[in-house]
Image (cartoon, rainbow, N blue to C red; front, side, top):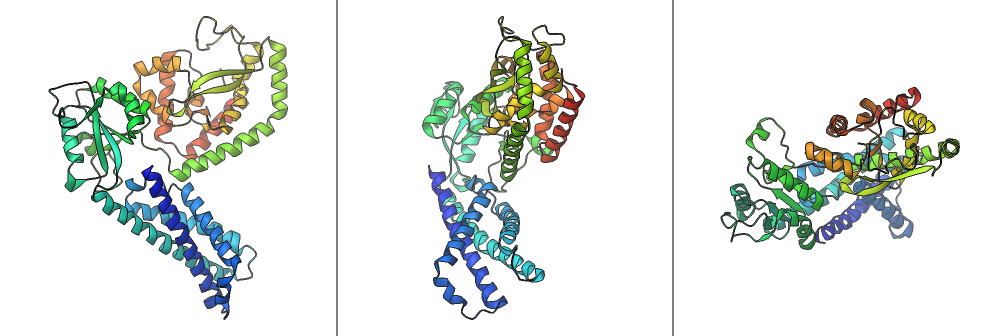
Length: 467
């Protein structure tokens, strides 16, 4: 794809820029600080170039973890440079620790060299990125790049949006390839822009035409149609945007990344910065692996208790809906009799006769959740996130509270704010009440909040406050 080609260009250019920064730093250190007269002779040694290549590879990986190669067309150059400066300063500290840990140079000189190296890194890589981004912006202004976009809607709002995005004087990168809506000859878009099908056809349109963005353009009176279009966009897996109302600007709920971008609201944007997503995943992997190893003796004891208490398997597997609507199989210790849902899906409740004696204890202490560390390891779940539900219940919740779809924008978790503050839900009404805690979590997601929820979960386990 074209965007992958651009990404490779950035990576290649910044690889050589990072190597140039390292070589400049090396020359300044050897020639000016340590005053080694024959330093240029080392330029012809393979060891120096191998080290420069290794350092450059580190920087590319480091910038990748910081999300520096995501959405290259959509970035503000100023904000992009600011993020690169932050990533470079943090990366310099790592390079410094690995390079000067056993160096005989005095600490003051080390600090001076690290600051100099950080400056060289920012100068070379930041300068290369600024030039590349400016070049691609010129190409974008000349309509030689962009992202394929479909308009969802066909009314006056959709027509005005098409005129805005299609204006060659104010082109912002949105290549409008058509619109999806019910066939309507009276639509102002009819005959001017290609109709690609109904809203229900959107997933197939996205797949066959390489669509990256869907912009919902509907009038304020079309609430039901807007929600249906939003659901279709979510199923299609595209970046979703909408036309903001004036009220959105006045109350400050609309944020922009670039002053010259189109006036569109991004719906369900990424909730964590790229480096935060990476750090959260690393923490999940480390904690899940440590948890599984630490709980091995407990695993054996619980498995034996479950087996002796009632007939059936030790583990319970069930399909749940995860991030982006992806279905996965959750793993838990079995707490109910094997024919618990012979009459169909049912939520557990106080005094539920389907729960076994051991299962009741496991639920109160949340020990039945321990096998879900496996789900965390394979990437289906996180330590902290909204609890995953079955599609059977999600459909009923969404029919009454469409905002539940927002929970599917993050990985489900072993524990959640709703779980520790509200607990188990016995019916749809209670599931909706608990959902409000999880929506609050998503709107305020952070490492600090995750840590607090984990502490609350430990209190729940030790106090046997589960249901």
